[in-house]
Amino acid sequence: MEQKLHTPEGVRDIYNKECETKLALQKKLNTVLHLYGYKDIQTPTFEYYDVFREEIGSTSTQELYKFFDREGNILALRPDITPSVARAAATLFENEDFPIRLCYSGNTFINHSSYQGRLKENTQLGAELIGLDAVEADAEMIAMVVDGLKKTGLKEFQVSIGHVDFISGLMNAADLQEEESREVRTLITNRNFFGVEELLDSKNVKESVKDAFRILPELVGGPEVLEAALKVAPDLNARLGVSRLQQIYRLLKLYGAEDHVTFDLSMSGSYGYYTGIIFRAYTYGTGDAVVRGGRYDHLLEKFGKSTPSIGFAVILDELMNALNRQKITVDTVHQNLIVYTEQTEKRAIPLACSFREKGRNIELIKREPEEEREVYEAYARRMGTSVLLYLRDDEKIEMVNLMTGEEKIADL
Image (cartoon, rainbow, N blue to C red; front, side, top):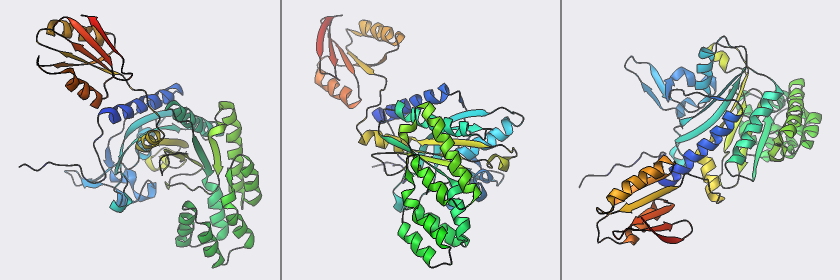
């Protein structure tokens, strides 16, 4: 017996209702991005390794899928789409002075350690606003995230916003070694503030700086935490960062997005290229963020164009997990099934054609006369079909709404 092949670890097949839901989600989110004036861009699934190299700060080079082309150049599957868009924008819009709004969707590939249990291939859908360093650009991005998540049917979610200059200011004031700084950042990310306190106690760190680190867990919440953050901000850059968050909040109120926004001054970017505000969206039913984003004012410089930028990516697989666990149904296109016999074929095919002309999805199945309706009804339910049209040889049609259980019989 021939052995069946299955997928490698960390990737999977998506089909039927789940695939329909995923594509419907992409369409809803894309609609929101287009409403804000963003234009579609597609970049290659793999690029030269240099596009994702360590200094770009996208992901660890150990977690890249790397391979060679015929000429011996090192290529890599994209772990993140933002560097690809930055590379394309630096080339395609080299002489454009006005802001560039781009949006995309595509799959990303990260070779996580197997014990982490995460998917190695994920679908991301995102937007990048290139060429504008302004609070208006920051607020527009966050408003789009809020609008997009509402459009998917989510009601209970929060966009958590921080600023890399605040944490960087604390790190500089603590005057730690590079290794120690990395450790402190990891402890903060894991919200292990006792570990942070213990490490700082073992170093010659000023008491005022320790106090600032100590109140980090309290700097999470509404706009009032920004006032508290200003009082402990260790340098001008940190104060300017907090002040920028206050200005963004003022604009978010104009968008009507403030109810879904919280501030978290302990946040530090997961990508090394972040330079200003960073944000993540969280909801129930998934352990990870459903959206990640931030400002990356120096990323395009790596590709030859010096211009500020900000962007975000929706991790569709995480979003689908959340919607599923919250039992939120995503509207998909209804599928209908016509079951007919040799005798009713001359009626069935024109009927299917007329439905398709009206934009309705119709699947045709020819049955043997002795087969019962229940067989096809069971199949239709498995496939997520909405309506079964069962054509009988006596010129009658049985119409079964599989969503409501309602049945009708009519003349063909």
